[in-house]
Image (cartoon, rainbow, N blue to C red; front, top):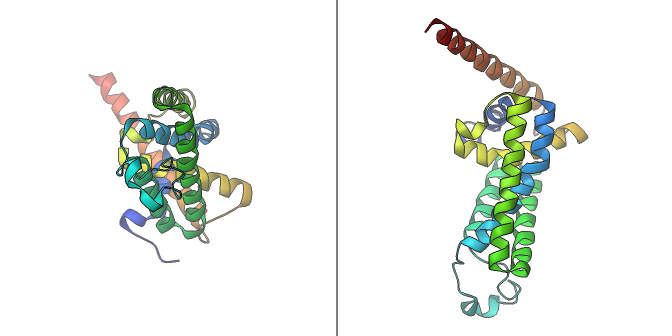
Length: 210
């Protein structure tokens, strides 16, 4: 397997996110909250952003979009971007991740249409708040390290859902994108955690001196 570089370097992305999520309890907490947060975000975006096409302009596409329930909006755009990115990182697990992304988009669209604008906005915000609080508590109480998004916002948001999916696939089915992936990533994670701990220790020593 040839090593990919740059934006499609799965080992680099996985190791970065994994270094912030090495505690088993924190991983479980994120497993429970990350994908629901994707759903809640799409729910919120559905109620807070306008569609690219007005319901009356759909024409023959009206039936395909279930009378405008499925909309071409920011939520749909993000769903496509995330899905394509995951498939480019790894075809097999990426396709599964893409299916989950579109399932969240479709499910949140129908729920939003049923709840109405005002209630959807409230449910979306409350759900996101719950999911984020759960994840921050996981970092504060168990990981003892600030979330990855504080160091690299884009990378953290992009890799969060995919990281958790790969973790589940590895733990339950022993899946690897390619042979030796897990061993190489675990080595990088240990190295990054070691480097972070050394920096933290140096900072603490400087504080004691001053």
